[in-house]
Image 1 (tube, helix red, strand yellow):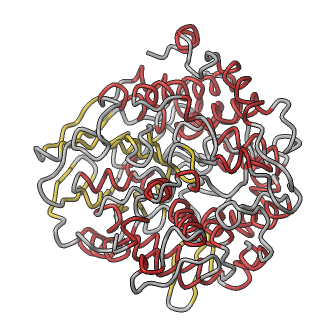
Image 2 (image 1 turned 180 degrees about the vertical axis):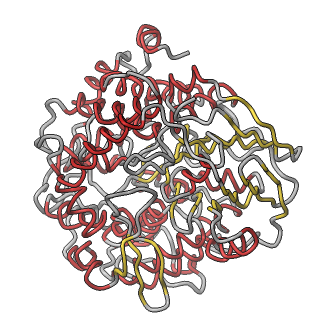
Amino acid sequence: MYGYNGKILRVNLTARTVKVEALDETKARKYIGGRGFGTKMMMDEVDPSVDALSPANKLMIVTGPLTGTATPTGGRYMAVTKSPLTGTIASSNSGGYFGAELKFAGWDAIILEGKASAPVYLNIIDDKVEILDAAPLWGKVLSATTDALEQAHGGKARILAIGPAGERLSLLASIMNDRWRAAGRSGVGAVMGSKNLKAIVVKGSGKVAIANDDALKAAFAVCMTKIKENGVTGTGLPAYGTAVLVNIINENGAFPTNNFQESVFGKAEEISGEALAEKYLKKKDPCYRCPIACGRYCEVDDIKGGGPEYETIWAFGSDCGVSSLKDVIKANYWCNEYGLDTISAGATLAAAMELYQRGLVKKADFGDGPELTFGNADAIVEWTKRMGKAEGFGAKLALGSYRLCDSYGVPELSMSVKKQEMPAYDPRGIVGQGLSYATSNRGGCHVRGYMISPEILGLPEKLDRLDTAGKPLWTKIFQDFTAAIDSVGLCLFTSFAMGADDYAALYNAVCGTSITGAEFITSGERIWNLEKQYNLAAGIGSNQDTLPPRLLKEPIPEGPSKGLVHPLDKVLPEYYSLRGWDAKGIPTKAKLAELGVD
């Protein structure tokens, strides 16, 4: 097979057995790889009603057909499982080098099932697979874990691991790789921890077979020209990283502040990408074969490492009312060390701050820890560490903002969709992005349909961020397009510059197929509908396709978006209709048959 290795590694942790299985080529072509193929395997093998933290749940580490190839950003993999945070299908994307190395070792995917009786890790060297004792690693933070495994298996090994947050089954736990790259959202790290699996070490000596080298070189050249000439991928992201958005979103009055109570942060410049580059950036930190190099490597005091990204700066910055960039960097560092999703971690602290502001959380609840008040920079650092350890009040924080707020009788103060915290864009000021949040198949998420691209950045064309006209169609297209990109194994950021025909050309050159750009997007639509079917079977109905009451009822108090609420009731029915779903948001039999979804 071209683009695919044709092999899946199945690891039963209960029985401590490993098995090589042939990749189902028909399913792989139909669902591409990564997110799509992982979801299909979950639907085929795991009851959607399963307890996400039970041994019956499975965790899939899945590459795409372009992962490990000479394509721009071809290093992505997906962690697919049932989410313990939301109850939905979870598919968390990560970059770095691990995904490419797994392909070099000859594997398209790893299926992890059961639960080890004691902590273990996997060591994969091409076809050789070992299940080894991880007791000495249990409890260690990510840097110490990585150091120990590199010393044991050589510095060229690529390592995926969980930190103490995953071991303690925090619903905010990430799967980390290459030290600070994260499959960050939906609590996938807790699923790995529930299986007593600490890490996966991989070394590969092979390469991915390409169908047409000349066609790949030609498609690559076209894509690289577009990436370099694009203002976002060629200039903004390389210079300032994703935090280039801080000032842009703030100037549009959609930069959530103090747990979405406001939408403009008066000190945004102090936590901007420009400030990060000027004061703390030491070097760029690109992923495998990435020409964009948006990753940052920063140093502050005795802290050094990858990040922070835009979403992280927002979550620990304006959402918590904090303008100290160095403390945001420190909070990001501890998220990486303990293996926490920075978006949900910061947003949960912001929710706790509002609970304290309202008198629902008491000072005594913090024990000897600092008060969680808006603007308290020391608190975001200290409580991130305690969240990672699940200590004291930190144990409540480790379950996420929805469960925290619900425990005080005010779940509406959690700025989440389907129990997952929304990222750094106020939907009241960006209509399409709000619709994308509400309908996301994995809860509050910006990278399931990044409507910021047309509504704010003007790519591929500029839309009025406040206009409802056309937004349902744009949202659907972006969601389907993204599902296909996630599945093929490339970074979503390439879509700022590349179109569907470009991805189809790369896929065809690598895999020896002849799909069109339209067929590429249709593959994404098929994946989106399969995810919806999984969620419905898991009990996640379309009644959860909504936004927090604050965003539907409370107008933005000040700034360029003053007076606005989100018009979800005006755009959601049209969205369902365009998807070929009924008025209750259920895919029709005709639509599923059209897409070939079982």
